[in-house]
Length: 168
Image (cartoon, rainbow, N blue to C red; front, side, top):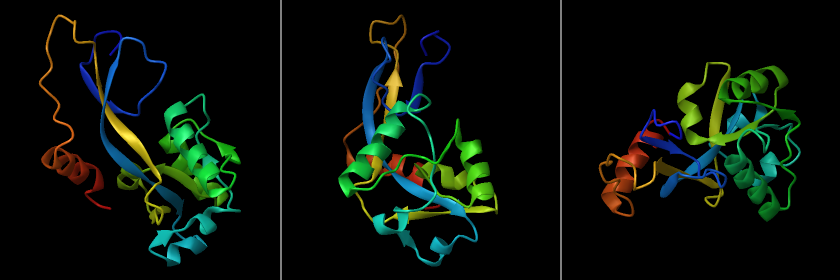
């Protein structure tokens, strides 16, 4: 976007992105990734008590500050340490490390559509555990115009949720 090669993206709101305009679209829930044979797969949802004490695979602050901030704030709210035991660079590493270490990972809900048979996911029972999904575009004074992004309406949110939660 900063190089002018794309006009619009759906990402997490990053604080250090000069020249980019963010619009909050929806709150995307985070899920717990785990090996398909993990003991927590017996339930339909994961509680904060289930997460406490588990070996964590997670994204470090320098790789995804927005996602790390959401996860750290959630841990602070619950009074549990969610510092990862194993750091990763991307979703592919999360899938691999979850399968190889037997740990769990807190990831955005879209990840469930990309899981191999070795891993599975469960939702969190705490509905306050989410990350904002934003649309971002180049500044309004650019030499082109984007179609308007509808936000804040039930129809727009329902459309986005359908795309993100299709298999959830």
